[in-house]
Image (cartoon, rainbow, N blue to C red; front, side, top):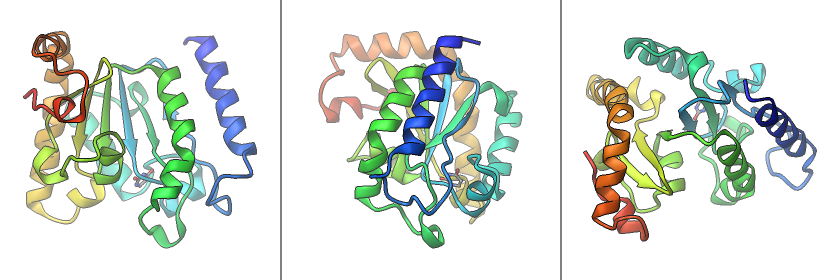
Length: 209
Ligand code: URA
């Protein structure tokens, strides 16, 4: 394990804990967990009831599905890093407000900088739109986008997948693409760069797959 990274993340978590200006402070801090050297970073929306109790991301029903899908593609939860855009539970599991997402943004930005994953997988519409404001979840989930030298892959939220067979099939199919995306990462980035797609939002959203 990279000790400097570990220390940087520990200090970041302390700063988050001590920041009295942040909203939702009545809930516990759920910083994130996993391999800090992971190639793949999963980012969800915000902790729910179980996550708030255990202070760990994705430990409820959605988390069980996430674990199952990771196993399905031959990965283990411990091999990836998992966090959320908002680090504390909104009351009654309501959607996070834009100002809550904005308040936690500097911390997520720093967390991503430290972990420095090659691929970011967003779970659900809020995490996707955090990076790609114009993207639409049903249209864009399962595609790979280039984003500042990384690949970003939006996937449905596990809770959405649990709501119906069609969503579950989409969720599974997108997971099944992940190992291939990792394998093809270099060529996907080169392909995007050669089309000069790096700069503006439309180009970032160019479908690579
Ligand atoms: N839903 C999320 O978006 N994140 C969690 O950690 C749990 C449920």
